[in-house]
Image 1 (cartoon, rainbow, N blue to C red):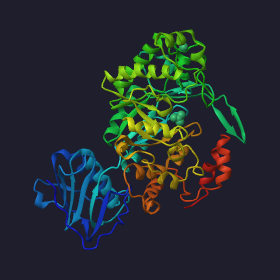
Image 2 (image 1 turned 180 degrees about the vertical axis):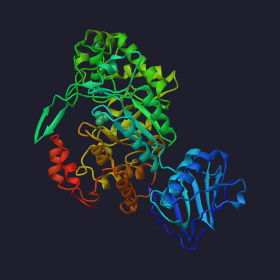
Image 3 (image 1 turned 120 degrees about the horizontal axis):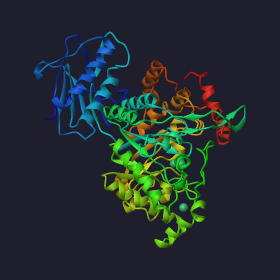
Image 4 (image 1 turned 90 degrees about the vertical axis):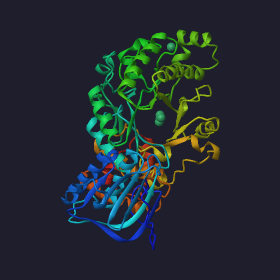
Length: 531
Ligand code: ACM
Ligand code: ZN
């Protein structure tokens, strides 16, 4: 059933919703929620209808009643087969709000839109809005954010805050970078040393007073299985899937510090304290290294119900493989011509292992070699290999786009201002017939320089809102006006955000300092500025 729209005489686009819906029309007249307003709800959408009722109560103290008689209702949640799987149609007219959706996800997003239309994050005496017709659906299937909890650890509470903010702007994938040289951050029962040893480093690279050095402050933390279960379920309630990343064969020092027998040299002695790229990587010639990873992946697959598991694959120096007898023997045995082919072989072993468990694999594009199975999704981040990576969409390779100069949120705003994120065109260079292979976009937050939640939210907000405009919507006009309500919410929640929306301060100086690994200047100046 689709409840038909009642068309307006004076259509207007200005609905102040973020991300901008696919289609909006303002209608004449307005709607108010009254003390005795009633909800009629298709049983599939009960949780979402209750969520709206709770939000209304929080905002104005009015209880919405539920009714079984549709004619009595002022708010109707209807099940319709006419909407996109994650989309909805919302009609506010003639004293009735009608939500049409075909899935719980679509209904969830309709409630998020109503939250904005009714201004429900603000205390109000009266809840009123202009009549309108909104037809909405996402531009991309994958609307993601990656958070690195290895360089600096962030636990369940901060991750839940991020999930909640993501869901409010219709993002749907949280990619957790769980393992790296500087920390192994997830409990694996079969290998307790991964967290006993691998989750703690004895110092970190810092910059203070213009000097860069490694301090001697231990830094540690990891997510237990209970933490993950709690986070996965909290996220699922908000239509967000958590995608775990186990980065290999490079960026694997923390695991190898715990179990050095799986490296080529057997001599990895500590969790890495400085940033950058380590030459110590997983041995590709030792059968036991493969078993080690397969056992880790078994537990990861059990913890995370996601469609995809990310296997990293970025920034892999092959020096150790070149000097390792077992790796060279494996090359010869498999008749491989290059170490890149050896990396492709290794990933293929794990892809097949995960496929048997119903999981698909994502890798960073520099880990996706010519020989890499076409079923592996490439997450494209490198500026120089972008063209080559994008070309693979013509062969059927699916991609997720995370270009570093547009969507790396650890970069200073001076280098990546909001307008640069907003201007990102995911289809640039993609052949028309291959557009279907662009699964979507993902912002990333690496945390080498992000050592506290305040800094994390400063880097992220309001970039998350700009990301949602690119990922969900295709109409980005008016972003700087529409983002105002988000900033008011961040103020209310006490979250730090970047206040220089249009003009980042001291561009040249900040960028120069950032490339010298002193990126605090922008954050510390932020508090002085008003919009
Ligand atoms: C990456 O930025 N190394 C994926
Ligand atoms: Zn080796």
